[in-house]
Length: 340
Image (cartoon, rainbow, N blue to C red; front, side):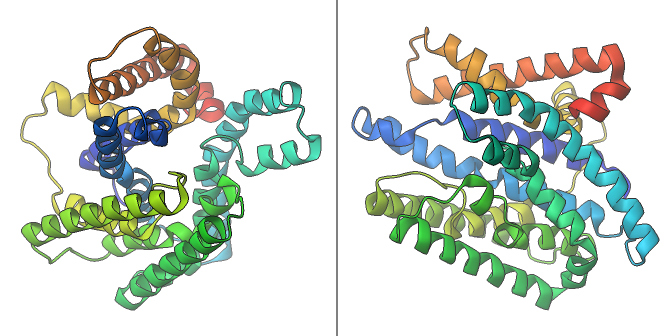
């Protein structure tokens, strides 16, 4: 496995901040009739931060590109270490949501338990997704070449088209765990990470930046089209334009691999956020929903972007304090059971 490089901790830090940003945007469609300027800003902002999940997947693939899983023993050893690291904390943090579902929403017990076990509550679909890639790693490593990468892109785009047809055109309600937690949908990004673990990026940074901007414009335009077509912003990050943009962002960020001669406070802080990004992912929705939004509702913000910065910053800082405090008490237990 590749050695830990602090630059990729910085990328993880940026990615988890983008995850928080995605979840602070709220119901963008509500702004359409109340503040059209804020609505347009929200659409653009949501597309800019949409690289979060793809970047996490690419980083995971990158660091697993040299992982030995070629025989039964190495494969079994890999799974026995990796899956509990993500699955046990997911179950722990899903327990309150299971209780809420059963006692306050009067949900079906069997369905609720299934959702609990497969990562079907809140944002935990990502755990189900990454475990699928762990299980498929021996097969996916064979795609870490140009032809395999093209094939993975085709699979992702076909998956997007299928989900768009059923959810947007046939208006069939598809659970988040199904359309966001299915490995074919995001396959191109994990395979891209595997590919980049073995190959250098030869395209110039200027050209990659142009593709980033083109992808962003396409993603914004596609968002408006989908909204006009469906009156809904569900699945803003799971569409072709967003995937093109995210693909270009990943290529650009990986081509920039940078280690400063002197690490300033911001660099060290972002690297620390990257190292605890999994813990932040696990708890940030609780903090955002039950603490930060309630405080924000009592404040009058002068603009949409200022409100977003408040929500993102305070959610991140509280998450960091909770994780750091818990790790200080018992790092081993915090890591094993809480994902900290």
